Image (cartoon, rainbow, N blue to C red; front, side, top):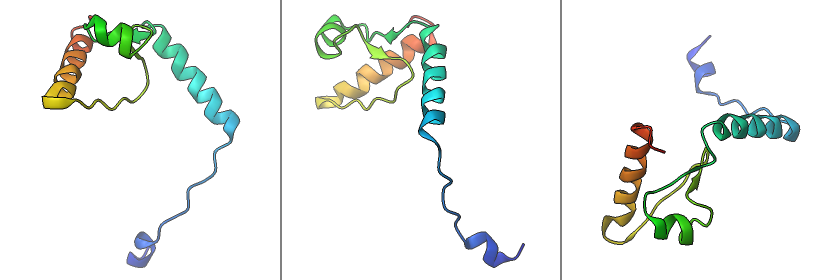
Length: 86
């Protein structure tokens, strides 16, 4: 393969919606075996902000807050998960 071949990008291959759905359902079943939600440890956030008792497992969440509040909540959640408390 020449140097020129390495610099050419290839288009992404299409993925059928049915394949994406099957992957999503498989991931949800896997995460559900660990419990549906990860609580933050703060009842006000879990019950009033995240109606349902915490973050849903298996999703990506962005946390933002004033005066590093988002960072503190993130660290608390990561700590609980690492210790097996979530």
